[in-house]
Length: 190
Image (tube, rainbow, N blue to C red; front, top):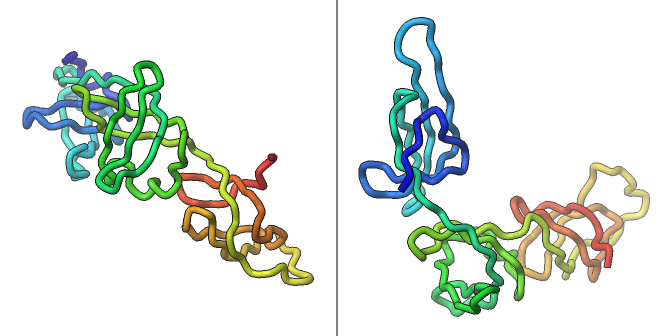
């Protein structure tokens, strides 16, 4: 563990608090009043169960910053109980619980490169690519005269997720989708 002063804590840092649990920093803001002690307010989410908490520290207080190891892994398959990833350097397999990936599990594709954050050899976060290419399985036919750029129609994608696509896009078209919210980005260039 490394101690850092509260005013140096940044979004995305992983901290280990007095309760022995790990927290990911959502926001960290320092306050410097004219009179009184400067403080830093840190909004965090406990990694183990997702509970959010806010702590206030003196800006000079020491906080334990966890040593997190970020490694690239390749997604292999879903074995029913967990998601299986493989380390590209030593070919070791890592089993990750579904809830660590959350709703983005629908966008995982075989051989997809992902970044996994490890703490003491256990996965704590999985970051999948921001965009994936999927095929439209089903959508409404093109409506003649519908040319408004802001109008979208519902579409079912090859991974089972529903999205909204422009009127000119038809079933069988491969599109780029944002994995954060499932939104249409553009037609695939392949």
